[in-house]
Length: 370
Image (cartoon, rainbow, N blue to C red; front, top):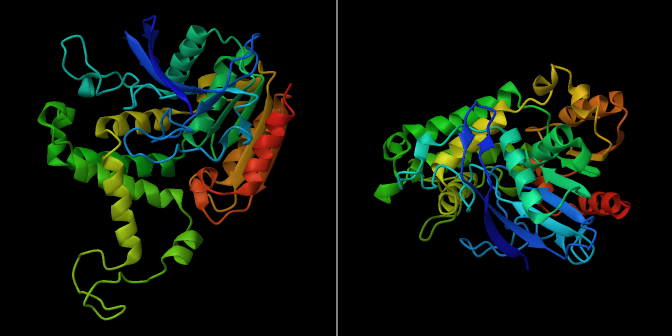
């Protein structure tokens, strides 16, 4: 079981957008025991809609942590050995400073909250580790947006990361990624209940728009083969209706439609619409090569970290080619790098699901850490 905390960090935090944010609150959880020399700390970075509850019960949904199969005693990220820190990213909605936080006038920031980058989020994490007295990470580990944060860590704080695990990720957002995010943002902003972002006092958030955004995004997390195997063109079973009967209307006739609607509805119970806008925008701005003069290899020139990159053969959101681009840049920079493409039917979401080979790769890489 993790220990949940939050801390108001000394500020202000300088942001890439040219403004400053203060005060800065970061919510986080820790697992395991920090060694006397503080050398056994691992930072786990979460994905877009994740949070700090990596291996403990989520307080809103009552469900197990999003990576409970990876983090814990005797698991690949073994909390009997490692002290694990997972922080809710800046701009999110599970306790860290974000658009739902109170501004100086006592009202929620809403769209007055400054636009962020992933590098801003990493800077806030570094301030958290300073607060915890952790100078150097034994490893930083993350999948998807979490992997982007790990890459940013090795580039921005190369002396503070000894090992890096980057799973199903990329060094920048492609035009296709940006396009899908824009569809989601427009779905939120087209909802009349969004009210320009000022919906916090109404207790009536733009749930329909956020649900549609989640539905569209969720499709990108899956694979065609996985959807076909799980749902195919099967119709919903309904009481008092013949097996496989069409209703000739616009209710969820197909099982896949019902599944996506469920994903959208359940999402709005735990996430904030404005946070979705801010975090997707931060991901779209991410381009590690651009941050280093247009040459990705230069991002890793000063890093002495060991790298482990993992991709999945059915991930079309961040396909294997994206990981290979990072590997080539790391090799050009002389970094110690291992890379594997794993087979899975689950698409991008494979890093969150039951893929035993991923457990072996992560556990083996970290087990070799000194």
